[in-house]
Image (cartoon, rainbow, N blue to C red; front, side, top):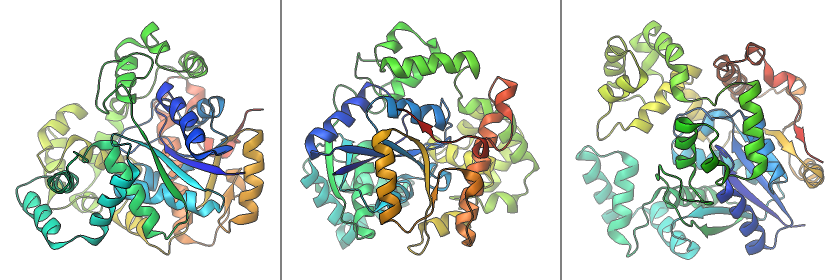
Length: 406
């Protein structure tokens, strides 16, 4: 039984994801798919539209066999840390043969060549990056520009960049997982308009935000996903966006001292002073971000910092998560019959703790406990903005078992 791993957010699960699952099996000849999926807060510093339980259910109904949670310590980090955490979990399972990801390139050999440059960092490459950073460009854009300057194809596109980080993580972890890539079709990553049956997640989220569960939306997602979203509207209320956390974030910012803000991940160069000052004179998150952002500190960069503020995440948390000595847990969100078989194989092949029920989790590892506490807190805070009072109860992570879809 060969197994392909997919790293995902499924925000929400759409036809493009279903296509990737089908193509992953076709390309690799795998029998099963395991997805490491972000929980309730995502890589761009935003909340998921629907909670991790609903999104994992969407995935299981449309081709994924086992969904494992990517802890929030990794899920709302820049591409390098996000990729490292997700690949580390896939590698820890001991049964994954392939990692399949979508990319604008679609050429794994080309991406591998660029990965070698990123890992070895020849002097001309380092100089190009440093020059861009001194001009006030973000590190990720500086890397992207340097990559484009030394390749014939324009590699520095969002999914290519994330793919390169997956390849770097595989090398760093000395993993035997074989990477494969699928070329993205029909849409660009940042498209904000639906383009038919295969539309990007950004466009789908924009459609939901503006028009709710429209007929156009129903054509861009599987029927099972649309049905789950419909049920969620009825029970939990409308989907969740970053603006829903506005009061909570402003409360945290205004009560925090400059010293408190300075320990947040990725706060540097006195950025805490600017955020603190503008949080006292802004009335919306949009206003706050617009007042603080620069070429170096982009909207996404600042959204992540707001997310860290909300969760109380620190530089030390991120430092530990990047350590080669740190371990991870395997938190099961959803599975089917094949997933049960996979879980038995994981138990036989992995030395890492497996969490089916949160109440059963116990560890002597201080960082592992901190990681889990952040996941539980992330769920509690996420649930606070749901419209149905019944959904706001604390410690939902302890009350829910993995979704089993027969």
